[in-house]
Image (cartoon, rainbow, N blue to C red):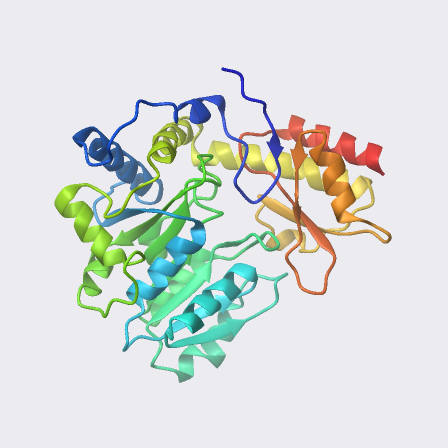
Length: 362
C-alpha cells in the first residue's frame, strides 16, 4: 500500500518509515490478551535499555497520552505534600511545568532564565540551593524545543546529587537522539513519548523511573485518577496491562520504531540528525536568515530563526506545505521567529530540497 511521504520538519510528530506506518496494520486485538501483554513487556524493556543498558534498577510505565500527560503525571505523582520542587524554566516547556504545578497546588520554586542560554548551574547553587533546605526535587526540560537549547544533564545531575535531591527530567524531545545515562546522571524519573526521536507514531507516553524512587511515593496522596504513576506501575506489575484503554496500534508501531533505533544506534541517529542540521544552518545563513540561539547552546535537533523584515510566516508555511514540507511557527513571546526541525526519518537531501524551495519562495 502506497502512503504519500510528507517531510515534517517540526519538533514532532515526525516523518516515519514505511515499516513503522505499516506496523499499525494488525488484526484487531483486545488489550487484555496475553499477546498484547507480551508486546508491552517487550516495549518496556526496550525503552529502559536506551537509558540503562543493565535494565536492573529501573521500571518503565506506559501511558496513553501526549508529552504533557506524562510530565504532568510525574509532577502530580512524585511531588508530595511535604515536598518542594525547583522548576528550571528556560522555555515554553519549563513554563508548562510551572503551570502544571500551579494548577495542582504543588509546592514549587521557579528558576527562570534566558530562553537562549543553558541553565546556569552555579547561579542556582549560589542563590537558591545554598539557602533553601526545603527543596526535595529538581525538574528540568533536557531539550527545550521552544528554541533548540540543550540543557546539560550531567551538570544538573551532579547538582541534584550534591544536594540530595530527586531529579525529574522532561526528555521528550531528546530521548532516542542524545545519549542519556539515568544512573550516572542521577535521574529519578524521566518522561518521553513515542513520536519524536524514536520516530514512532503519536499517542503513547512513558515514564522511566528508578525503582527505589517510585516505591517512595507509594503512600502519597493521590491528586489524579488517570495521571497516577504509582497506580499504573503497580497495575502493570500485577497484570502486565494498562489500567485504562491503551493506544493499541500506536504501540505496535512503537515496537517497530525501537527495533529501528537499535539498528541505527543513538550515535548513528544523532549523526544523521546533525548532518541535516548543519546543512540547514549553513544553507539558511547563505539565504540571509539569522539564528535565535547561539551555536554553542544548540542541540542540533531543531533550529529557531528570526523572521526577516516584511515576512509573512503563514504565506511561507503554505508555500512549503504545498510542496510536501511542514515547518512550525515560533514560540517566543514578542519575537517573530519560526522553527525547523531536523529529526525523524529524513536526511540532508530533504534539507537541500527545503533550501531549494525557500530560495524559490524568496
